[in-house]
Image (cartoon, rainbow, N blue to C red):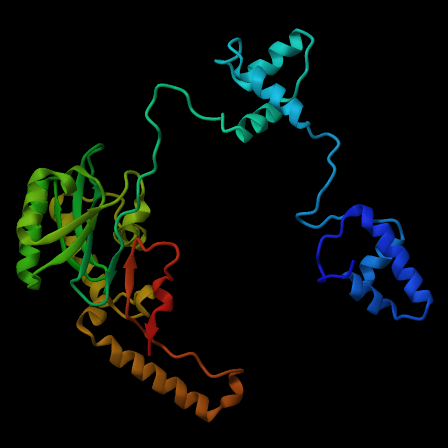
Length: 354
């Protein structure tokens, strides 16, 4: 009966084990040594000795009085698959049998027995549902590698009329590399904008991510992007998180202090948006890139700022080390930014270098 501690001892052997341990203990053997030979702990022996011999560990054989026998479960399956009930649900089968004075099992038990036989499936003449795959992951390690863009509506004084702000953000630096405001949403306008942006930034190739709007997926737009060497990926329908970076920018736009309830005209919308983008790019300290401005990160001047911060805090620590319970954290530059990363990939905040 000896064996490795933790093995499952059958129920019918436990009384015998208790008797043997008691006998050896009376003969002078140490109790914990006897228990160790059997493969149980002293506490387990005391519990068995008190009459609590049921094994509640995972994997132990248990007696479930209310469970159906194999024959009863087979009768449930045969009844559900009979020609009479072949087109009925378990709920309908149960109530029909009850009205006839017969009880085989509950609705959930019907499903459980059918599922065990692999007989629970969709039998309707419809296409099987499927989930849309995630967009491809985009990884940026520097500026002008990955751009994201979208169009947001700006309210006008006329109810039902809108102005449309086109914006393109650099994934790595969060710099707004291009924007325009128009009185309509158009693939032709977007195509012209990207031709201009490629010339201004001198990029030879870039990944571009957008949602599935008409202006983003129109044939004119797709043809222009192909000609410019821009590789496009799009979000899943209705999943705004697939294009989270530009959506976050638009939220910053509309939740900032001073955002107008409505814009007087197109010129007002353009003037206000230009001022906001200038502030966002050159003055706004972005939390996700280490509280530097997008322009500082885009041009590489942020590294000098991190060095100054670390030098200042190191000097303060040296002057009065008792103020810190541990070495002060260093300010570091985020080197990798990921768009639509798989759940197993750590987020950008963990990929920093000093």
